[in-house]
Length: 120
Length: 219
Image: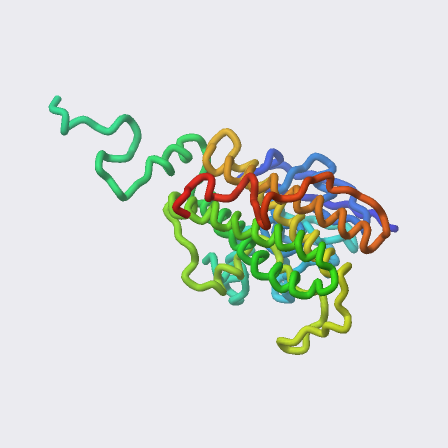
């Protein structure tokens, strides 16, 4: 088992106690990034936690993740550097920007995929 | 000042106005965005409607497991009750159900509880289907619902007692559903006794906390 350093930028406008902060935590390659963050006391937005609703969406700024456990994730999401931390395990050290739900909805609408196409 | 010049209390809603709702502005005054809440509720009841449909199909495929069928039937009907309990709240918050059911299902906040087998086009490969697989789907669907309604409770607590009351009623039943499917899956898959600890419903899909018959007799 490997453990990676995950740096999470939490934007100022995020509805989270850590808004405006940048936090760093260690995440095992078997752990989901969201669960690891919440275990470390960084309460990021999420809903289904099955890689479906996209509430937890984040921007991947650096590194690689395994997103294969997500129930609804498109190749175009990866190409746009958008990930779902609820079902993403690290495959390297990471840097992500949390709270990108609106950006994910816009992206999904642009590629005519749910839930964005129903909400934009 | 003449009576007809008096404002209707304080706030931004003019007397007689039907363009705004005090029921929404009161939430805004307390720091809750009623439009954001409304959209979350549409997503959440989309998931309830989806499970009502997919549980119907899962139930059909529990042949030979009549006890599992009955429990699934309770959960199925109670998920419909959850949809019906909250749908009126969407309208109270100035929204409406999506006109296209495809849109409604696309934005459901939980994955569809599909038969856990490969499909060839529209046809499921039933040779690989068993009760264990179905119970796992049911369990994970309930877990998603618990997360969704917990989020709604967090969002509304101390700010919107009406939505909070609905969400907490639903959450109580979703937690019970999870316990049912843990009990059934524990025995079916692992041969372990893992009781839910519950008594039988009064009638199928009783929805003891959430049915809107007890809240609105005309529904």
